[in-house]
Image (tube, rainbow, N blue to C red):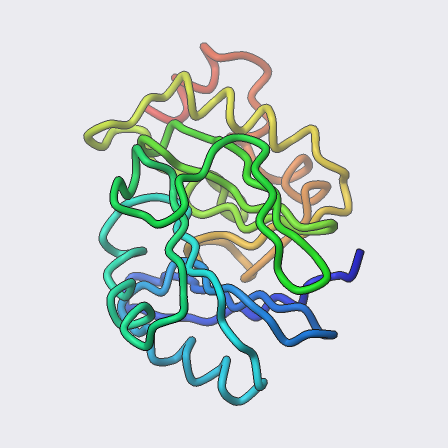
Length: 205
């Protein structure tokens, strides 16, 4: 399977990251979380001659999905999100779903906790982790619909991924824009918590 190209773009004053993913062979691609400056992602797709087929949302918070309408306005693009996050999406995402992109695909991982319907998008060698996992941190669990126990479980799933897996977060909150699972296992105190009780004390303290 062809490795997808992943382009990371800063698209808000809230340090949001948006992403353009595409197959280098077919130039078919997807946009993830267009945030507040969707034109930046559209311009990047044009400059790279990428035909965007899918718009993917990691979760339903407004700082991530505000630009959805602008992306979809051109037509020919399907919106994909978990029904608990964006109920009106064209494609209702669920655990293990495969989304084809050219000669490759993305796998959906159900990772609730930060918000209902939070998902992570996994490629062969990377994850786009939304607000579930940041570089050196994790998402909040004190917002409406958050569940700290679910967030702990979701992080336990992610820490089982291959150590070389690249981590592309939803915000630029860490010491660098991206990392690896190995780096997080060494430096991220949230993902290092040995049990739920210690995680709750750290995250909610």
